[in-house]
Image (cartoon, rainbow, N blue to C red; front, side, top):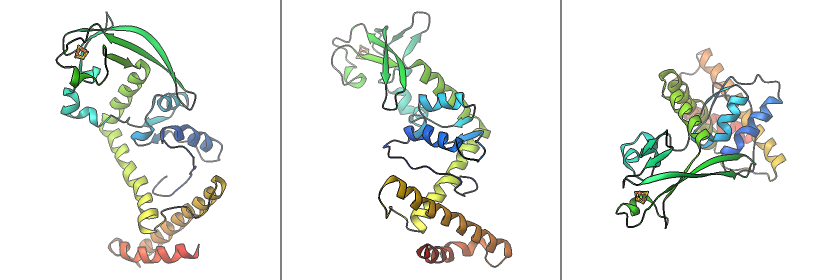
Amino acid sequence: MENQFVLFYTIHQRPTDTRCFKPHLEAWRNTSLPFPKKVIAHAGYGSEENYLYSLEEEFEAFIPYTTFLKEQKRTYKKDIRHASNWAYAEQKDEYTCPNNRKVLFKCYSKRTDKSGFTRDIKIYKCEDCFECPLKIQCTKGTGNRQVHYNPVYEELKEKAKRSLWSESNAQIYAHRKIEVESVFGHIKGNRLFRGFSLRGLAKIQTEFGIVAMAHNFLKVAGLRQLLSGKRTRNQKSGDEKQFVFRRLILF
Ligand code: SF4
């Protein structure tokens, strides 16, 4: 989206946002539209695979990850479940847990997710959790506590965090709400498009195309009225709802 105009869209039968990111941008590559130098997306798209993809494709990604905001909270920083709050000795590659026991590196493990992307995980294990008075707060598991650490993802998350913390980038990210959410608000709330009438991916691609086109036309019409001085910004909301609804029925 740009200036609240829908420039390009794809529709996916995937339950999570994360796995729609790459297919969406790859489909974009096959269009005549210039490929974006900066991509802004909400935390649902923050994943190791997507961060790596932004590096491979050389665009700047403004994407937080799911715990980005939570991590800033005092409660998170005091929560002993998170190994990121424990002391870590880099040279020995070991943690010291809140009960002062060593949590030692055991092995590497590989995880492959549904999209076929493989992650390398480091597994650490506490030397002895027996009779630990903090066990209930630390883990729900039985036996000695394990820590699963993904070094690549953690580094990428650090990079994303540093980037989003900079004032200029934070402003760019904040613009996402105005650009994207207001368009969904207009389409779903003001124009009452809450579900597809057709069935099948190909048909709903077309149906959403019509909705997006209607949105863009109405935006142009609204802007023309505004520029011609026939309508002020303050008159916009109520009039537009009526106007938009009638126009949409014609589609
Ligand atoms: S449960 Fe194990 S890892 Fe957690 S605080 Fe206790 S001893 Fe440490």
